[in-house]
Image (cartoon, rainbow, N blue to C red; front, side, top):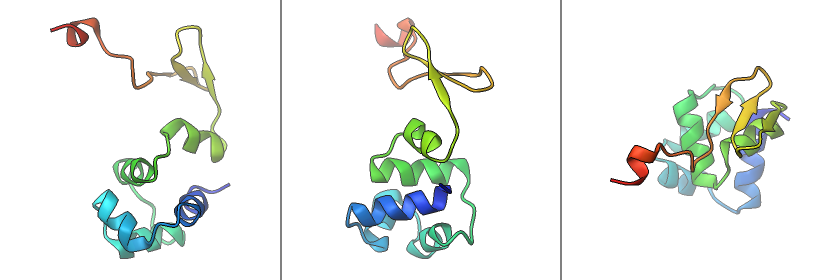
Length: 98
């Protein structure tokens, strides 16, 4: 599945209008429409805003569009290329305990 198709499908399944998604994400509704139509390619930052607004994790999105992740023993995800991708709870000890 292509990323823009997934975004549109999830928005429609959630019964969220373009304008509501624009309000949630801070993006312009015409820009979101262009993304959903495959006319515009969002930056990684813009895609994160859309995913977050729809309640979709980056890992779920990557798996749906065909990027495989592997979870190791520590609960962290690693991409197919072996690059470590920390999960949201991977906080350095120095930050976790002030």
